[in-house]
Length: 315
Image (cartoon, rainbow, N blue to C red; front, side, top):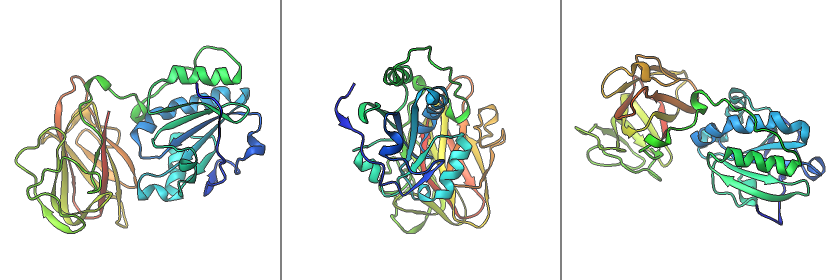
């Protein structure tokens, strides 16, 4: 465990949700768990049930859980969207809004999710980045609280279910030109300008491509006119897209897998025929393969302009 690293001030938060601002007076003598998150991050989503369970199990023992929402994409700066995510994920503990990244920088943080374990003297005694290590993290919480008991039972289901690491062969794939890799439409990327793209005859593993009139911007890809589609070749049990839209009304979409209906392998946000509705900016679970996990091609089609795609993630 780390020693003698004082927890930074939380005074740089731009707003607080679920709580009045918390400072030294409110946290003095309390064990604190600080959770850096952003609501579209699949890695954070899969840790969320554990943090909620620890909050429920140990708050009466003196644990204070503080979520620090530091946005990755522009849509995550909007407080209304963060409020919706807090509601949808059942978060009851205080959340500090870190739109200026003041807390991110004060903690010298670099990752989503990130946990910092703070003792009752305000010293950071441990930190952990990413998923897993849940039993050890809970043991550290108990140690700081001076208690010992059986670990809490955590049920992680739906989009929060653990990844199928054994069959995961596809990395996070950003769809804006700043961080994009694997783009395979003929002619390559036209940065920041509207262009008619076509799908190649075949996609290799972890390649993606567009069909229709799209603009590839720095952090996202936007369907500009008419209808269009985005295709990606992946190997994973789960496939997700972070989507938003700039139209006045929700946009229907349809997902195919290897050219056909997803059937029983549909994700939480589409039906067996692949139909879904883009109604707010968030992560959409499109595919959860049933049975054997195979390399597949996912194609999502939109009948009208306005769809915005940020990143594809897998699990």
